[in-house]
Amino acid sequence: AAPAVIGGAASWSGGRVSRSTMGGNGSKPGAAVAVADDQQAIISHTKMLEAEMRAELEKERQALTEAFVAQQQELASQQVINQLTLEKRESANLETQIAALKAQQYTPKNPAAKCVDEEGACLKCYEDAAKSGKGVEAFLECRAVVEAYSLCAKASTGIP
Image (cartoon, rainbow, N blue to C red):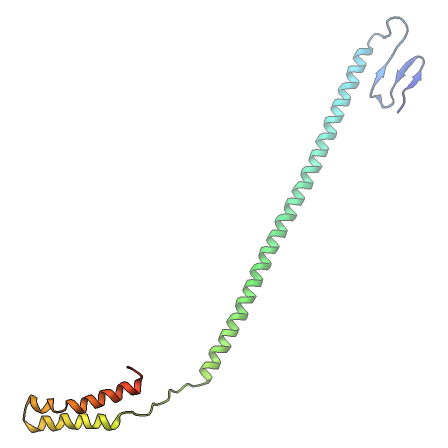
């Protein structure tokens, strides 16, 4: 805004800056006090505007902080919900698999008896030795039958 000249005095509108010049030394009595008062008013007004701006910025910062915290909480909640959903799905799948296994009613197969003849021969030899009354020598005579039974058993189990 350009200064308006009124009767030889320059004045800025709004009372921001005021300077009066009237001949002589260029100042009126009390003009310095008026300028100082205007400067104080400007400083006070500026401080008031700054305080208002700070308050607005603080409110905006607080609102943004609250929005951020709310968003973080929402994301955490969503992650928990997703994890629980996944665990429920996996649990249901596991229960289905367990039920399917139980439904099969597994019964182990009876393996075919092996080395039956050799086992019978071995037992018969020991029974005969016990009845003979010859003592230890009778049992030693069963050595060949026991060896045949042992070889058959190893062959049927795959043990070398």
